[in-house]
Length: 316
Length: 299
Image 1 (tube, each protein chain N blue to C red):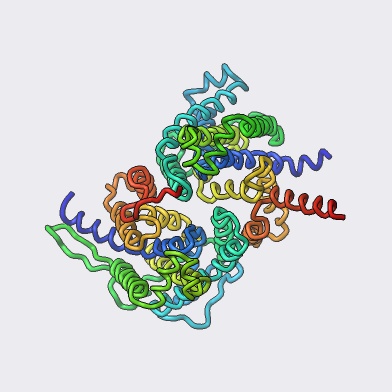
Image 2 (tube, rainbow over the protein chains, first blue to last red; image 1 turned 90 degrees about the vertical axis):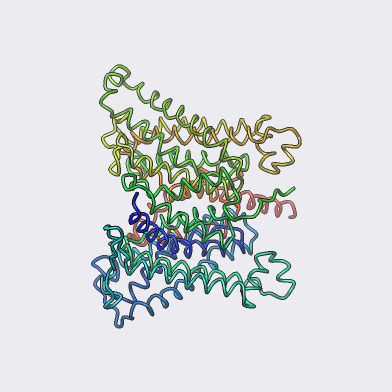
């Protein structure tokens, strides 16, 4: 428990936690408008990582339909990240059209949306596997050009490593969070979005095209999901088409911890879980995957509305 | 006919086994509680049977009991599931709707990580070489079949007595039920624990059936698949879970000629079923029957 370890864990926790926050906001936005969880969000996260890989590296492995295919052009990392995220946003819109809108139109049990969105996730994940196989794809080490892998500081004689990827994770997440905050708080579109979240019927009476804003919300949600998938993929590798599942579940833990539907709550929840994982003693590291869910279970028992959620209303 | 059973016996037994998991979600749903915890209890029940069936320290007991070791394993899984179900149920059932569902998802994940870290559960490899109860896989219908009919009987019986009315009252309006003097928490926990116990015993029967047991038995995907059995079969009919399981278990087999792309189509069917049969197969059949008889009356 020395100062260098503390600083290193804080750094690791903040960088990964900020990506959790960005990813979880994709759930939050959809939940605040529709009141349901989009189980395809983890699949969009996976898709984002694969899309960016295709755009930036452009060469596939030995399995699947696209075995040994090389893309005609590749982009530098940052444009690839942006284009990958935008394409993921479009995939998010497709999720809304396939899994949510038809059910809304027919007035089906909201529970069914859990199953239909999971069905879409199944399609996406298996389509990826069909196309590029189940192998691990890693971004090459020189993806960021000439930047060094890490800068190592000595604090009290102990080394603290600031990895380049951590700075990129944290920086990109901050930019996304700031952009989203500005859009929702300061623009007309954001105002309409908040109105739709508050009460869709009233919003539509006031001339807001609710279906268009739902579609837009899914775009932003997919954008956030695809971006965070790329960021996680570039730091830990893309471990097959199913690698989004565990992050998808962790994202649920994040939004419940922070308070369902609360945007600052999702950010706080992401950071708490990221830090919780980073500060886990190394001899307990095999329990790392349980941290998010133990925290989730604990918060539900102590404060079901989450850290920043409003009071749960009892409908009479 | 014997050829049919040789080819499809495993499939039929699997359908009944999966329908049991669907029913274990149906129980809490009767009282309006969406719980995805079943698969965690299924996984734990399987581990109880796997450990009791293979642990060297229990060899004398297995020799003494012979076939009766299997019922003892079911009992072990039942006791563990009921105790753990009550322990998890009381705090978790203060939550409603999506919160309860997410709490039970968290429970399943914690169970998963916990068994992966328990040396007795064999880590990621799990436990294999679990003693078989029968020579043929098809004979396991003598395990799952009676349990299925017992569970079905329980659902039917509960639906026709005071307890069932209390469950339905809690499902329709918890506050009003409480105001009328229905013990809401007690009924919710009872419905939840019934589901846990059924899932646990199903797991204990499944470990010998599948011969190996590992943490992959208790994944999140599997728990949503169980929910899909109920919703796609029809959540308001006791035959719903069986219908849903029959469709979703046999679908990958029917689509086998499509090879690699069959899992994609599986997803397409799931989405299409949600969109076109929002009341499930049983609900769709009921609607069809009503329409046909309605036309018959008019003519």
